[in-house]
Image (tube, rainbow, N blue to C red):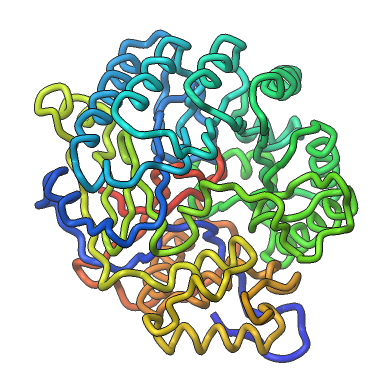
Length: 500
């Protein structure tokens, strides 16, 4: 990927089609560590704050754009009840590990899957176990992802009672044709009813809209944007669908419907159109994808709002000393130079806890503590970074040199106390994540994109990267997005992690 210098909007020669990934990508994988051995490796003395992620890997229906770790299930299934018991047992097991208990969480996120598939009793059991085993007194934001078909007052009340403050749901699109192609089985009446009802129980509501689908027109997207605004929630998030990691079923549906892929410039044009539409309607960006409804539009002094933040995303795409602990099958824990993924298979995750009172884990050790995470991920995604949060002396000249290039090209502005994105920079914020990454991590992303882009069943019609040398035998290779770790329910662009 080349940076185009000079006075041009097209700052890069191509657009990265992968929107969210774990960082760093490069590291050595090992299956030889047990759960306790892995967590004994952590040095939490430098950890500033922490988030918890709880994965519920069940859905009533499987959407075709989603390749996250999930499977079919319905309320009352024995498999879900056994999973809840295993999850509560994992809380008890990990609460006795010093590295986990040492730092109380500031943020909690229930992802999936569809956490709202749980019964009210199961929700309360999970909440009781969390409160019993962890200090939750410092939690400032607790989010749960709902699927509107399974949303009831009883469940909303149960989530509220255990501490949830924020509700999200995956709307994806109002367009009936794309809803059919996505296999979205909820009705729009159910969606509107759920949005209104969730407002009675939670301080904050948000939802996801996808765009950039094969054949989507500006008129179709404009209709989705306006209906999203009219829904009346406090925030909403718009994700360009990642066709490199959606399912073969969706691509078959596109083909059968005669829907052709958009070029990357068409897709970027929709992004620019979205931003102007939302800002003209009283909203402002608060991160790479999200818009907040402003009480007094036009008074925000910065391009990306500082009035609101999705606190959980501060742990997915932020600083090296804000860590994340995951619970449930395939959930990821990331702290310091260590990444630990729980057993990806739901059945064996449950059996291992029932039989051995432990969880099988896969461990990746990075070359060193990723002190540069705040620059590589936090600045592009959140729109700014305070300079006193950047350990400049521990960051390679390679990355700092690229940051200087972005400043010279007008994509980042140096405000003295912080670096901040310009509107031009935000347009290319995903490319900026890649561009600021070390060359070794870029090569791994190149390999992932090249491998997926040559698969006829998944190709989105855009040759975005050229193949490069294979990753080394012990380097982590991101093959599929396996876990919704807060990337947005159903975005089709969750965190990249190595497939087993």
